[in-house]
Length: 325
Ligand code: FAD
Image 1 (cartoon, rainbow, N blue to C red):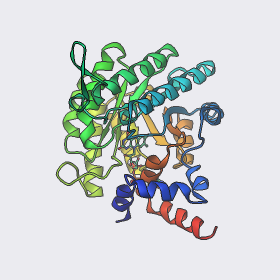
Image 2: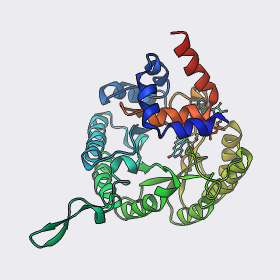
Image 3: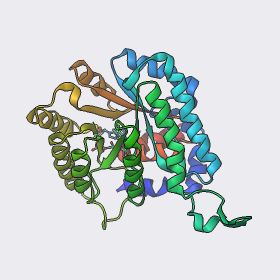
């Protein structure tokens, strides 16, 4: 019940200001987001890698409002890649990006025409093109240090653009991954297309507030869809990445991989930093590739609120810590 309310709040500027200013917020946020800048995060990467875990790194931020912020997001990832280089982790530390942070949602060029000497000129590109332009150097830099990038899935209105950018990037960087969300009706068809084209695909349940016209609302229906989609990915040509903390889905994932005859390095598990940490280590100790999605940065509000929405007990903990302060 609380989940949808918190998800709605995750898009509210007023709530953003309130939550960000709360005296104990930082303490609670640290559980999920173990650093504000790249200096904080490099030791975290090193420790997780030393423990046999792999990583996908997220510089938090989304829904930026101007091209300067989009360029800053690109530069933050480029700095991260630069700092990862000496660690020589290759694909053991990859990047996850949200295209909305790279400018995907900025206004279309028709609203930004002005009369130049040779007729109408664009002041800036359409958000889709801008996001592609900003993400490409990050994918190139990642490839130079022997790793890759995965495009996160945001709300359903952004996905056609995300898949088009994914396809475009794969022409030069076939290892570029993307995310699909089991709660969306469209996902079974997306999975068939991606599995046939041999993509790296992370499957998650889905973390946004989506209407009943496009997404399953019932938890059991979402779980059933997850299993159907995972079966398609496992049977296909690509590299499935099982993004879930759900013990039942993890067990089913192992079974489906086994049925498909996949070896341990032909799929992987992924979980979020700070959630079911003992399970990360258990799977790694069993010889599985286990990748920890590790977010850092100062613009943590949207990411943090989605983590609260996934487990209302987190919200109770957050509220209690404010009251006892
Ligand atoms: P759930 O049924 O929600 O959780 C299973 C169990 O895990 C819970 O009972 C609880 O014990 C534990 N758990 C789960 N979440 C939490 C939490 N926040 N706090 C504490 N315990 C928790 N979603 C997108 O829409 N787009 C993305 O690009 C995306 N990328 C992701 C990348 C990774 C690596 C992962 C793991 C998730 C990602 N998600 C993404 C989020 C995903 O959609 C779900 O919202 C989230 O994973 C919770 O679903 P679950 O499969 O873990 O199952």
